[in-house]
Length: 282
Image (cartoon, rainbow, N blue to C red; front, top):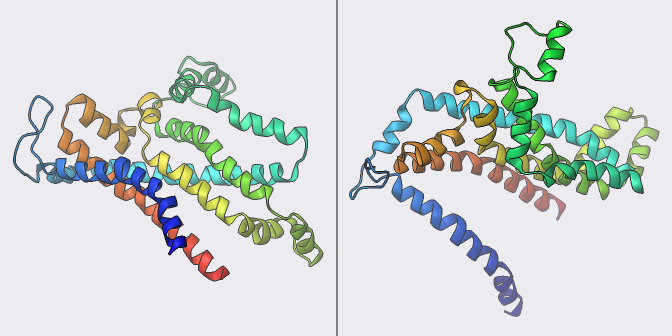
C-alpha cells in the first residue's frame, strides 16, 4: 500500500502537468473545431462541421504530405549524421570531447529565429555562396538557393541536428566499446561491427533522437516562412495563418488536431518499441 501511495505521489505532478497543458487544451481545441467562426475572429454559438469540411480543400492533403515527408527526411538525415558523431564523441576523452560537445551546443546560445534569418542572408540570391557557385559553374544563372523546398530541408536539418546528436551521445557514452573489438576478433568488418553491435547498443538513444527531431519538425512554421516560398508551406504555416491572419479559429483548431494526430504517431511507435524491449529484457 505504501509503495502504491509513493508511486501516485511521484506521478501526480506529471499527470497534473499533462492535464493542464495538454489534455485540457486539446479538448478545448476539439470543441472549438465544431463551432462556427465569425468575421471578427471569434466563434459563434452553435455547432457546425464547416471547419472539418474545409479539410477537403485539395491544398490540405498536399501540405500535409509535404509536412510529413520533409520531417521524415530531416529526421533520417539528422540520425545518419548524428550517429557517427556520437560514435566519435563516445570514444573521445578529455578536452577534445568537451570541445566537440561545445561546438554542438553553441548554436543554442543564439535565438532560433536569428539563426534561421542568418540562413536567409547566406542563401540570398545576392549572397556569397550563390555567387561563388555561379562563378564556378555549379549552378545556372536562374537557380535560386532560397525560397524552395531544398532550402527548407537544409535549414531544418541544421536546426534539428543537435537534438539528434545529444541523446545519441548520451547513449554512446555508456556503450562498452570493447564489444566492437570482440566483434572484429570474431571476423566482422568495422562497418558490420558498428551496425550489428553499436547501433543496437544505442537503440534507446536512437529512438529518443528520432522523437526529438521528428516531433518539432512536424510543427515547423518559422523555417518555411523565412526560407521557403509560397509553394513550400507546411501545416504549421496554415495554422499560423488561420490563427493570426484571417482569424478563423475553428479551422486553426481543426488543423492543429490533424497535426496532433500525426505527431502522436511517432510517440506511440517509440512507446511500443520501448515497452517491447522492456518485456524482452525481463
